[in-house]
Amino acid sequence: VRDTSEMGWTWRHNQGRIFMHTRLTEKYPELEVRTHYAKNVDDTVKPPNCPSIYDKWGSAGLDIVFGTSFGHQECLADMVDKYPNTVWFHISGFLQKPEARNWGLGYARIYQPTYLAGIVAARGSQTGKIGAVFPRKLPETQRQLAAFALGVAHANASA
Image (tube, rainbow, N blue to C red; front, side, top):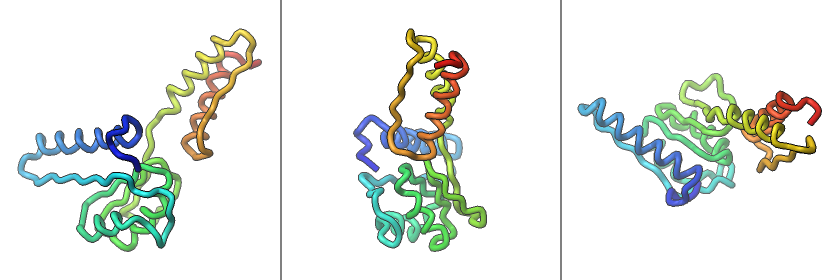
């Protein structure tokens, strides 16, 4: 989504790509392991106006393409039938395609530390009033908010 020089979500995904490339190259030196990435891929468009990078990578025959923004979900899903030999894996989505063998979803289990943060917040509050700010209403932020609330309730049922 953003430039990988910004030390955030996109940078961390790129670090994972670099790590995976290094490990696969070390473990399987006989394979030609190549990875690609694109900067500043627009995540505000929907099919049929998807970024051309998806078609470029699908037609190039890449084995797997990861989309790392919630906004990429519909465009990635749109590629599944068009390029059946490429696995399209979306990070941070909810769109199910059970009939597609080349579609996958994933997300980090960050609700666990968020639950702990709720416990810390509840135990640290002298008034029992606790606030939390969560960005956009997305499935992953809703999971985090629920985890935080459960942590608060675990530590202080009256908060």
